[in-house]
Image (cartoon, rainbow, N blue to C red):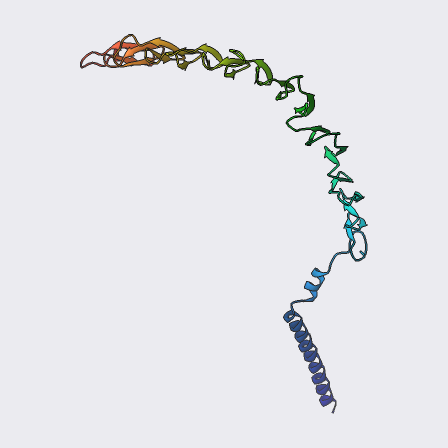
Length: 275
């Protein structure tokens, strides 16, 4: 009797264990079918807001609550929007401002200057950048245009008159050849492109024949060769070429070791005797 009782109890326990396992399996399968699981549900749970519970229409600005209708979040600070109905609100560091009336320059808020048609930033300062303005922003500083020079431009930290000057290496330089000449820079100097050339940082004379540079010099390629940065006459050779700083005729001569010129001898190596 005891033996049968033990067998019965084991059967009941085994049935319960199997039933629990089956129920748990069915429950997990059902949750997976619906697209969630205990782990997934835990991952999808939203983190608490850093500024606590929000009312409808509220947003978080760092740890502060604010109403985006009346405020802007400026650098983690709720700032009151400009009151004007036509304002174009913007942030300047932690403050809100109206873009129609102010400019934010290097986190500094400044009003538009009076009678300014095209306000702009020059470092932390506001200036009038319009064509007819009397000011220029040069290297981060506001400079006044010279009197009577409405088309003045910047040259480094100074202004210059492009009608009479050129800007060479950050400095205003008078135009070579006068105001009506076309001048360019050759290093820190200006030169007249109609009568001069810039050859390797040196201003050389230009003519109808001297139209090319050879080192720091101008030369006539029809009558001279440029050898090692210096012009040398072709000496009437039919096929002239350079051998170092020497000019030779390739039809009758040979250049040996890049510095010696010898006559070509039939059936002999002209450079052999130089060894």
